[in-house]
Length: 257
Image (tube, rainbow, N blue to C red; front, side, top):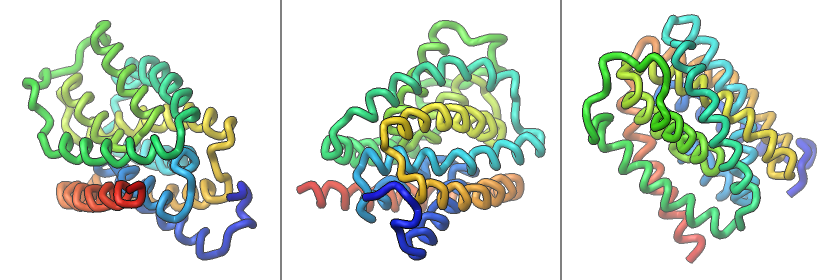
């Protein structure tokens, strides 16, 4: 694999543009789009760790578009989001450092099992360990700091189902409704994706041409996703993600065996 756009056909460019639209749209309204995009990239021939880096690099623009629109609609609580940014970035840095060093075959089998676990977790509901608070605390305590550092670590390392992980953690922490939680999730995602993408790019785990195609698609997908969330419920697309994720996880395990 080469790292320039001219090494790929128009077909590849269109595929990754469409993937960028889909990923940004899904992440804007529900989260979990990497459970689709990462295995698709691997099945298209990208090495797993390169797919991990290219995927997140291409998602940055889509996250920016989504955050801009969610802020415009009044859903983004910046005061709470900024409190959680430091632990998320610290965890993301450590997770990304490990991710760029892992063997491709180990990453692929880990990805498959994590995809299945994420689908199970996303089906549990938001309150399996108790009721969320009526309002977020004035500032995070040490438990919340460590918890969101763990969320950042997972996002920096693997990222698959990160939207579901963040939604669960943010609902437990803040008690906000799903649209407010999604807005904070997209804000934190923008920062940790940008931060971790630098490390993946620096270590040669990003195919720039394909990432740019995804980023252009993400600009459109992020806008459409935030518009959709403003008007409609998103439960149907969450179910579609779960079905597709289980199928793709099975294909990844089959390929390894």
